[in-house]
Length: 111
Image 1 (cartoon, helix red, strand yellow):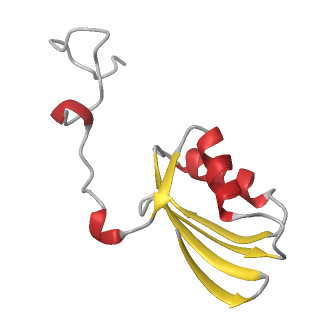
Image 2 (cartoon, rainbow, N blue to C red):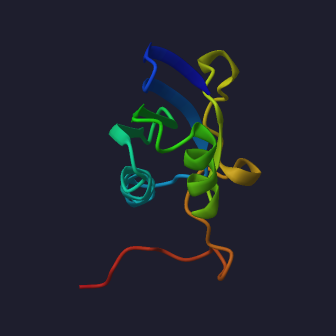
């Protein structure tokens, strides 16, 4: 986490996130964190895997934000662009997972 003190009761914070795969995931995190007391200006960037917010009033500690995100099932830690990995699909796949059926057929719809 990176915090920049603006005064004794206000702090800008930023984290890296893992486990998000769609806009609904980002929105779920944004809504949950926004409900914490003293949390303002919440931004969740799906593609950048980043959470930014402002803590005011000393009501919520950064650790409480981290705990909230983890309770939702997502990973959270320091955001460091230098440590970011490029996107790779699991198992080197290059398309949708079709583990439930063979791939020797056409996916086009019949009309």
